[in-house]
Image (cartoon, rainbow, N blue to C red; front, side, top):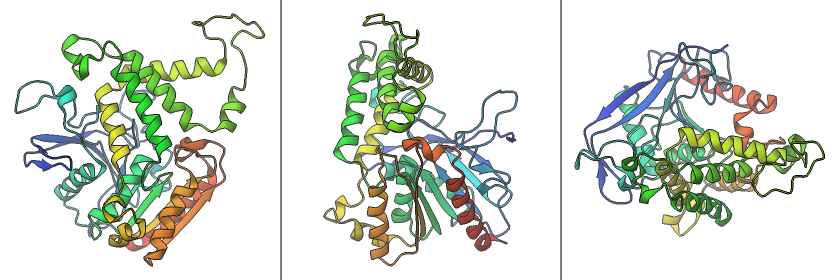
Length: 376
């Protein structure tokens, strides 16, 4: 049973310095909160989102059917991250298209929509902005920062940028950086968008159009990488839409997997912003905390003070278990408190969003342990 939530927004007048140079001023962050902050303000958990998600992590909006948050199976009353025990914060990152300041908003310096001129943002910039929000909410230390995929990168970065401001980092289906293959997938998706005739150099808003063709292809490509070979074969295999009838067509949908991918692409192109897609995939590409330490991950993670839970999934080839083990080994080398689980799940990268009982039980047990520390 889902619960009703209301989105909120907080404005910041102080300029936020950006890693790429320059700054962003007069920006706002959309966020939601679930549960109550205890007397000691020690039970707050920050949830960081991945590429196409938002601050709407859990619960539903009043009067809106099928409006459950993207991690509603994980967060809520009696759920693994129990909002009867924790005060959970979901925040939408800068550059997104779901409420926080992004390319679709007006640049206060020019009075025009940012569009393609919105500054490049990084994982570290997001963490800095999240830290300002957390401070404004009156929280000096988080019980945990948690995220999957790109969200896991943010949780890891929190432990390095603000090592004293969190007690636990929960990093799920993530990596300390993207390998060349992942960057390649992101680049193909970006090229699909920027070569769409309706992209107009990123200033398509002024032309009253949306580069839907590029967004569809980007989503179709991305979706292939989120699923495992096992899932795709089990769910679709080589099944045709029309029985055994071959149409020998270059345009019509023949295989069921084609129908599924086109449906996902069509849906995505209706709600996601093209400039946001470019910005967020670049942030993914750039994240590499070991770079400043001669690519030595152990040295990079020496700053961390938090306790860690890392989770990976056996069939996730986008963020393979080996990448999580790299982080585990670097943290162990620094004598940090680390728990690690490799879940044998067939669902590929999407497993971190699904209802695998072993996975949910593991997270529940970990947060029950955290709740004992956070009691007022």
